[in-house]
Image (cartoon, rainbow, N blue to C red; front, side, top):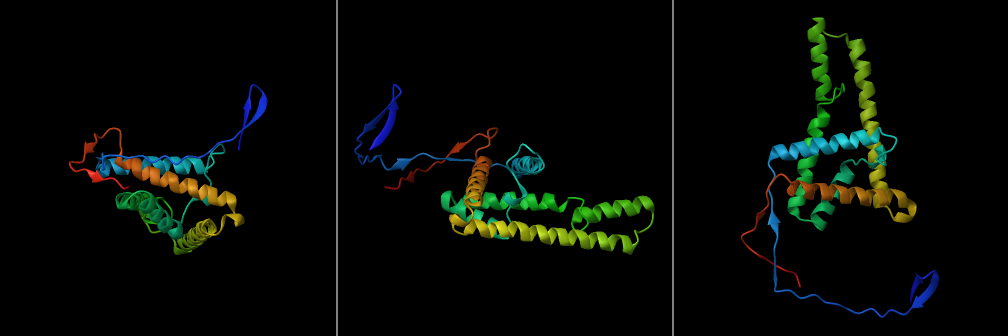
Length: 206
């Protein structure tokens, strides 16, 4: 029974479902694109910038709890391979690799970027910084980094639990997985790169 509104009046219609099967010739056309590492790097930089900007923006729906830790990354890679292909899973690895590389360059004391910053400060001052100043700051950022990893892993576990415990978290997780899988597809379908048709045809599944 289908309930509709026609000319301002409710109307009930009986609808009988019918199975409609599509047939083809057994062949399908697909395109293959291989973006170079520089295009992949620029795409990851753009996505990382937009994500970080969204976290600190009041008008954005992106929050810190939408980030993923090791559990979420493995789950996301599985989703990309299951819904897409092994190639999309490899593109997720590329995204994670570039993202971790950029994160490691942040001027935070426990990261390589922090060590570079301290080296520049010591070079300007002409002497090493006192240990009583460096050690407390380093320990504080270690605690913050571990706390953040526990925080994101907590939400990763919540996304795995049944939806009745956290329907909003599950919805955000699904949207995040679709977005990441779509980002992996976008890396393959860059507008400024011409697509190359595959020389062989792939048999279509029945």
